[in-house]
Image (cartoon, rainbow, N blue to C red; front, top):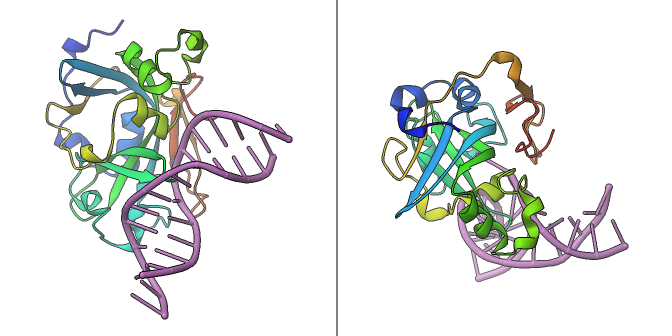
Length: 204
DNA sequence: CCACGGATTGGCT
DNA sequence: GCCAATCCGTGGA
């Protein structure tokens, strides 16, 4: 088991770099959400980069709007959006101010608060124990398990409610690079990254 | 004001 | 593999 107390929080210098650099480096980091006395955490195992300057699939491609304005801030903020009438998806804003770049979190390996996440996803049904790999393998599922919604959009990730922790360095050969999922524009950009053989990745 | 589609998920054929 | 659920951001009239 990882001793989270020894890990340092990721700072502004981490987040304000190029979106694809940050995306790759987010793999293996610990995502933490404090809710009162509850604590939920897990290892990031799958991400996608979005860059409004050249990427038609990015929410910022159309310019600044009320919905996407947090993506135009400097790196280190949290961007949450609602889609398909049913799901939230969470992103890490990256780069310098006005770049309009962010990383979508698509897969997490749960560490702390697994019982709470299970309850958030499936209720208290004990007959669903075989669902242990279906808790956080997808962006909508992550938000449901981690209790993330629109109210968390704009949070500063250097604060104490939602933040990320440093962890052991991931080797280049453990990272799979491929195209992004579920989009209809700019579908050929190889901006999806995930940890090889990890069962909490949404799709191979 | 109205129409449209989406960085998804889960259930059914 | 196919498709409904379900709502809001966005853009055009």
